Image (cartoon, rainbow, N blue to C red; front, side):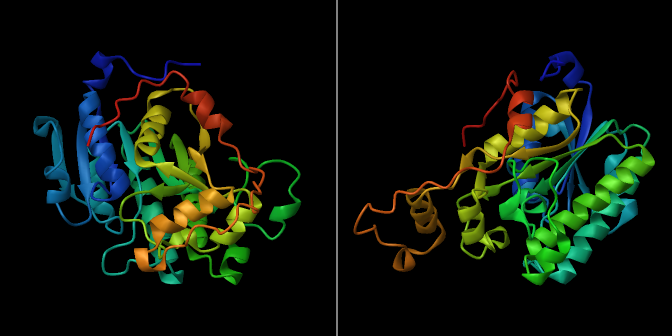
Length: 306
């Protein structure tokens, strides 16, 4: 396996683009990439100060306004870049996932991959997707083996049960893969679990179907630092390929579920401690991230101290 971290002299010569750099994943990626020595094009759909207020090396940072539905603005941000880290978050004027947002995310993915195909300097695209593009199927309980990067959510099943986050992420990722393969773009995807963050609430669209995820043994979460490390690791390792499921915790016990519920709900609605400890069931984990863990064994992390 190739080294999981590039030499400092190679990193210092590389320019990479992060889009959308104003999102939770994107802004954290900008900070970490600058700390590692990269020159970063931060492509934002909106508020500049989100990136400019947190970056540690302004000399290596360039900020670009970039609407994922505006092909030309994407091309401007990609000029001279050897890689793109791409993640999509709904705009502030339409924060919820529905059929309309699925269409927006698919069009954005198409525009971004087409722009990468037209940019000669792009060597790799790291595409942020979700575990919800993996786990939702009508026959999910009859699968003989653990779910992994080879599995895809069934869009018709997702539509039937209004799992719009799954619809959006599945269609967008499939669109990106189809275009990448057709146009010869070197792409890898990171399919993350529920992102744990201070602002997390019960209304997060990932949580639609949480009870079923829990009982199926596929309710997984990921810390922001680990998610960012995974993105950089698959970029820097020349042997990376395909999809990578990214999580570092499994919610599969009653205690885990209660702890998460207390995080998600305001104090007045939090679940009280159980009166007995009779429900000690642990649901068998039925999803695997072995592929990513193997790749990241030798990765040199530079976790931020906030």
